[in-house]
Length: 141
Image (cartoon, rainbow, N blue to C red; front, side):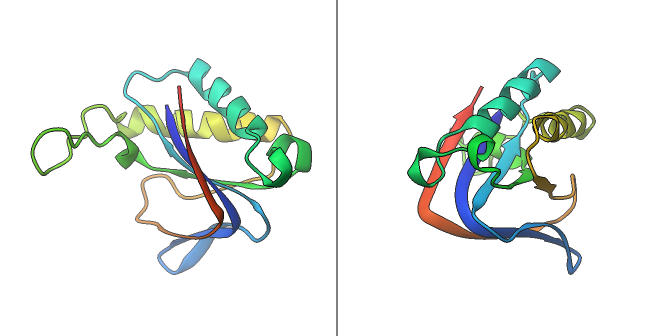
């Protein structure tokens, strides 16, 4: 499981002209990729790491500040570009495996009390963000 986490002042996801998820205050934009071998156990660990990640201002986390998270599934995080000019997607989980794990991360975040917005799995999404810093990290399990 892999996440690109950006500290943002605002972010949104648009599908077919409709805003489907947004944060309009400082928080985190999480682009979440699921590996073909990932399990529900990893979803729980990823949720904890995202919730407690101390990357907000003054080394705070969403857990300590209540800052929102916008979680967007992104299989392209497992694109392998080591050979040739075209990425290979073989490491990325198939949609039927990935969708429940993305939902498991979101559900676990909400169970922890996090305020979570999401994109729409499998949709063509336009993701907009205003990065704060900019500050972006890779979280990998």
